[in-house]
Length: 303
Image 1 (cartoon, rainbow, N blue to C red):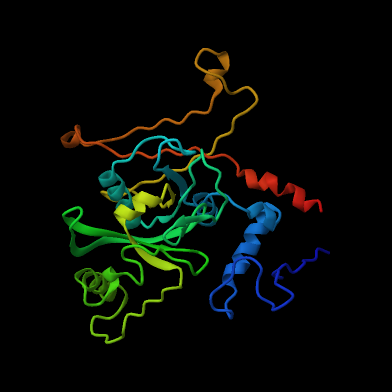
Image 2: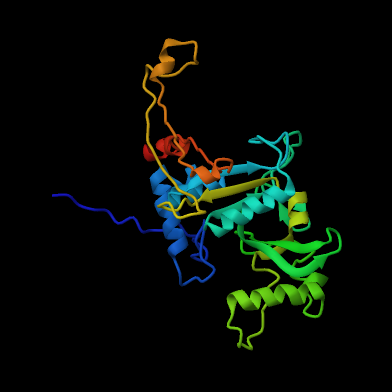
């Protein structure tokens, strides 16, 4: 008769009973360490979860398509330079389609920097920041002569924040400044009832902060996206399609080799109305292989 072993135990510190790894801000909630425990079991052990890229973790948990944008030449994963205006539009498009995003500051490959080392102004290298929101406020930035563009980020530590412009203690967040009034108006409209008299509380040490798009580009080097591709063909939206293939022992090589014809292939056909023959279509193709962490955790299972 089969039996089941309960695996809901969470590693904690013997001194005070606090969880060793990820935890909730509210000690009465356990959903974060429970999800982390399940993810660790999938990969064999907690050790297999050390380091890595945010978009792969998000893709594992959601089934979305992972994408990495490296913004600086010479950094691992760089493929093309992004014009700031095009990058902003891309991030806004991902936001509107419900994608999950994160970002990080990777150290210069030519320099030896330890993970979590200070990058300046309250930021850290090799750290997985959540990209919670982005948008414009009704304030003209004198540096760009356009509406100020802001990103809302969160340090997963729940503390240690950006200390520059638009940070919690900056002049730009003052209730009487034009920038502060414009930002507070957005916050009130989006997160609170318009007739509410509730005060906006700014916690300088909750890990969540605003940063201008200009400063964000100055510091951050990588953007992690878990792309949500809506089902069905509604006009003006993404249409997602997933296919699974396998590279057999007879596949591989280049066009000059006989095995080229046996390589897995996918044919795409775009049906565009006659009136839109000159129109363009944006296509994203991702090729993914089995997560190497599943193999990495194999050693843990045998202990």
